[in-house]
Image (cartoon, rainbow, N blue to C red; front, side, top):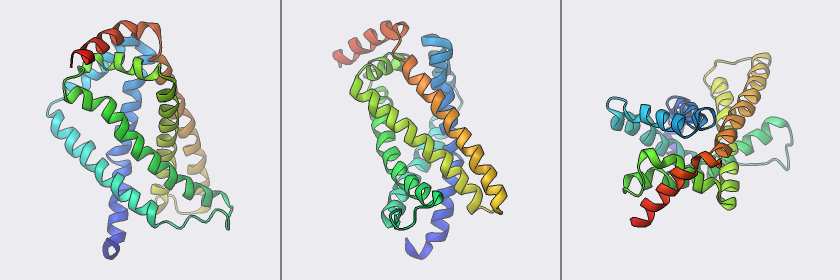
Length: 223
């Protein structure tokens, strides 16, 4: 790993933006459909994704394998990092530390979220159409809601700050002015994307998702 760390870090950085960054934004829009269109809007968004041609291969090579590499290698990077915010307190050093910490939180959260949702679909406990109801049950559990808020905010910070670092490391924002501008833009991205995700989370708690939630619970109990 150490002998090829430059290439590994470049691949890690690139995968964090393409395709995982694109998937992150798509996932935000899909979930936001629950806020904008209610249960039917969310079902339509999920159905659109699952009706894509070759969806299994798109997910395998566009999400799961990149996610596995980015996540596992990211844990290795976080483990190797020398976090020294106590000695150097300037802003980017705090952002460096927060990027590693948020990456670990995001890694745990993503796989827990996958277990609660996609894995349940895979084993037949719920269908794609019942995911809205399942999310209703999850978000109405105060403990899970707090975990999801922490996970979503951590993932959004990791994405937005990682995008800033990507622009720097790939030579797109070279000078201090360009980096300062991109930093301000990424703060805006963090705020907007976090807000949209949080609106989605709280929309799942609404009464309109209750009927779907009852059906999902009934199917889960049968299994």
